[in-house]
Amino acid sequence: MQRYTIGQAARLLGVSPDTARRWADAGRVTTHRDEGGRRLIDGRDLAAFSVELAKQGADEDASYTSVRNAFPGIVTGVQLGDVAAQVEIQAGPHRLVSLLTREAVEELGLEVGMEATARVKSTNVHIDRT
Image (tube, rainbow, N blue to C red; front, side):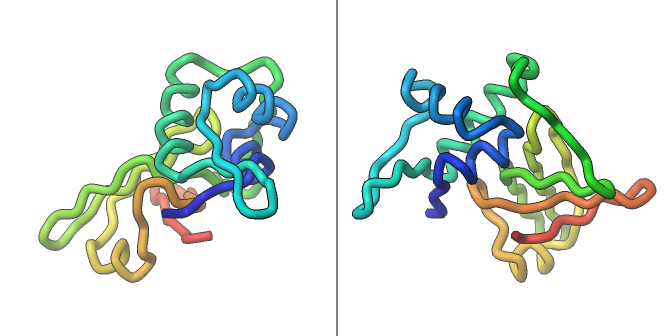
């Protein structure tokens, strides 16, 4: 399972590290300490929290940007079919869904809780594993 530092989680959620730290201190998202004492958030916990946060609306401290139509975020859903697949990414307040081949999802190793970037070109959304 991929884990994220407070700083990484903040970037994926589109907030400052101080805001992410306050949320962790308040128990809104569960953290665990590694051997070095750093607080880490499990990818699945961060994915669930990002969906919850988006449903509540944007935080006043959040600054959301899209640089060249790239949306870095966290994978919140993967549905595999026989040939096609659906991947859902929560990028700050933005939920992006892409349909791609099952083979592409397997090659990228995409799973819930991992970091990925959705890139939007015209009407197509492409997923890059980060």
